[in-house]
Length: 128
Image 1 (cartoon, rainbow, N blue to C red):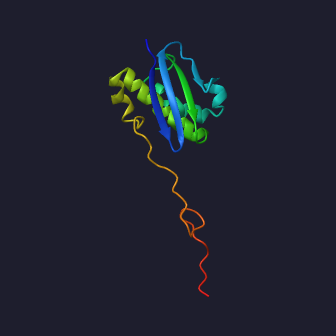
Image 2: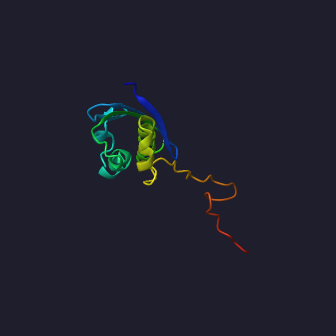
Image 3: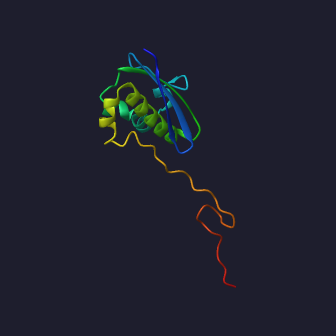
């Protein structure tokens, strides 16, 4: 069967995800997922759609990700896997939607404004 591609995004991170039926081999940027995400929490977050749909070990997943940090990339991979599973089997959307896995997180970093120290922090006010 042809690989089911999809794209996931989170903050400035982007992940291209391809799933194919297989033995459960997961690679991220040509590395095993355990090596790319040594922190168990990030690995669990990235692979959450598979556990919610009860499909661990059913798919070979090849992921290419860039931008952002590891946490943002884990969120992008999570959305990419969820979208790929929905393309593979549309009935899975009924399982993934209540868990909030098919909705893109719209939060982005607020830009710095001129005349201010950061996005919201201002320079110290002096009355005199």
